[in-house]
Image (cartoon, rainbow over all chains, first blue to last red; front, side, top):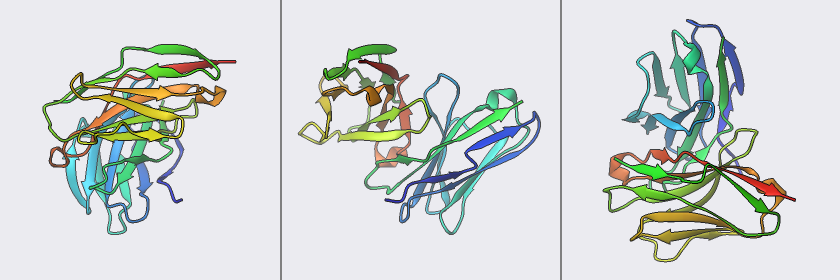
Length: 112
Length: 116
């Protein structure tokens, strides 16, 4: 079965640089979620999209933005990167009514 | 606001034995869902089992079962016949009502170590 695809899997950036993370949901899933998991922490919800519109917003910094495109893939754009942004970034997708969220493999971002 | 509490930061279990991972939750929603995810050292988040707040029967998926006690607001994960590959971090998570947004709130996790 097709799963959530995230790219890149690993990313190394310098402070103050920008990064773009991509997420391709499971086919026919119309909702995408982004989570951030810092080292030794539980995942924290950042933002979600339903049918290409922002659905909910969590603890996403103003330096971050995201969108969902017409093909349902989503991108998380991160600017002015800080050391504290180093984390595992997960994308998940779901069919709204089922509610079960299936996670991608994550993108490990390291900010030096 | 929703809150998930996992009181066991780490646990050991002998291979082939059963183990229970605790999870308690707090929510004002009448409709909600409870999830368990497994996160091996490689980092991916693997969905294990789901229980809806209106489900009368406890969810089961192979060796995983969810002991759902609504009045106590607990949703413990039971893993039967533990295997070495079960060694991982386990997260309990909650989704509120669809109207509330469907995002997941996670507990702090329990690290399970299976001894041969």
